[in-house]
Amino acid sequence: MRKKRLQGKKIPRREFLKKGAQGGVILVASPMILRGVLGSVAEASGGEVMSIRDLGRRDLEQLLEMALNRGGDYAEIFAERRVYTRVNLEEDKLKNIEYKIRQGVGIRVIADGKSGYAHSDDLSMEKLKETAAVAAYIASGTAGPARKDLRSGDRPDKYWRTREPLDGVPESQKAALAWRANRTARDYDSRVAQVRIVYYDQFRDIVVANSRGLWAQDRSPQCWMMASVVAQEGGIRQRGFKSMGGRVGYDFFAENTPEDMAREAARQAVDMLAAREAPSGQMPVVLAAGRGGTMFHESIGHGLEGDGIFKKLSHYSDKLGQRVGSDLITVLDDATLMGKRGSLTIDDEGTPGQRKVLIEKGILKRFMHDNLSAMQLKVESTGNGRRESFRDMPIPRMTNTFLAPGHDDPQEMIHTVDSGLLVKGISGGQVHTMTGEFVFRVSEGYRIEKGKVTYPVRDAILIGNGPEVMQKIDRVGPNLDFTLGFCGKAGQTAAVTEGAPEFRISAITVGGTKV
Image 1 (cartoon, rainbow, N blue to C red):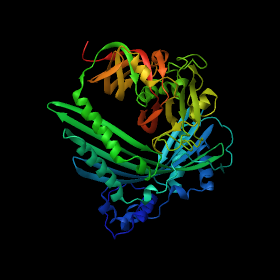
Image 2 (image 1 turned 60 degrees about the horizontal axis):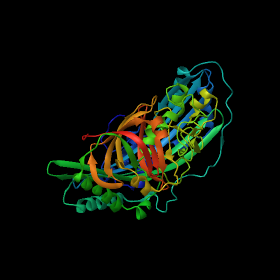
Image 3 (image 1 turned 135 degrees about the vertical axis):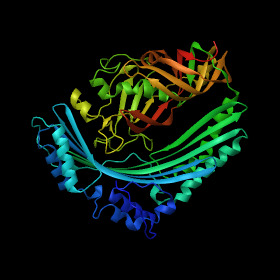
């Protein structure tokens, strides 16, 4: 994108966002600068511009015809427009407020098992026809089924019924949330040394059309906040972290306050200053509600995604219908949960978001598919085709993945442990999808001795194998809780939610500093 010095008169931010999106530009600046540059956006973008909203049915059908003109089994158009706001507060200073407007179109052709993909952020029909031709050339093959006429249908969305839309809230109000969180964390304890607060929101509009006749549109919100707090005493430093949000509007923060979020992050950091050396060896481990969701997402969920199943790169590739866990284990991926971060009205291929029982009472029931893995395995897509942006091809990804709640008493899980570990936080780790082997770092852990929680421990890690751990879960509690996640795969990032109630692993290897 060519650079140009922008000058101009002040105009309303809403009009700026509209014009900026039409130009396909990406903008990062302070609010004062943004409010002064609108007069030249059209000039900088090179004259007449288009928006994804200008792509009508006839345009889409023409592009699909061109995408299939060298032969192909399937063609798809994905158009996307995003508007972001990000507030970053650190070291008691408002570091920056960013706005980004990005839009473009990706075109994919699948022919004889090959995928051709091309994208453009120039939305003129001339450039989009070139994009379709490139995708067709990459995946040229024998003639497939004829293209069907496009048809559209309405689907109920799975997003927060907001009373106050995000794009109508002034930036000063959004920054005020960050300042409130910062003040609460600073006031929590004199040992709080560093505080970072991030506020983020976006609106994402997509249009999906394919050669099977599908034509779907969706507009989804995304809003979240996070607090990272460092406490220090002497030479000891500990970090606490808390985030909240989802497919929600600004009014979410009326009941889920920045103060509560910041207070929890500060509590973690301060409490862990008293941590002692972590024990090591095989022992029972109890995971608090919500905190085991990461384990299921990483060590189980990725192994159930369709691309790994087709390529035989997963431990679960040949185990459909077989027992893979104890009777207490039921794992779901549910894109229909209202307001959750991974919820989808439609996925990035236009398939409606679905509730899927992956493992039921220990029996493997289902995998997660996008269109490509579904075609390869001759099944239906499960609505798990997701992509980071129009520049990326969709791949099978999780949405809201969680262990279903059980009926065991959470206190009994602890009282019947003679020597073990209570885990209230997991951060970071490594997982081998093919074998299920994992290493997770415990960010907040406590020693269990003779049925009682005694003192916090530091530097503990959990070392195990997902399929084996599934057999060793002997208690599952009733209190399902969720945490927000950023899932990385194949160089792409996706917004997800991970969840679990309290549960106990009868024996797992804990790596620590004390034998």
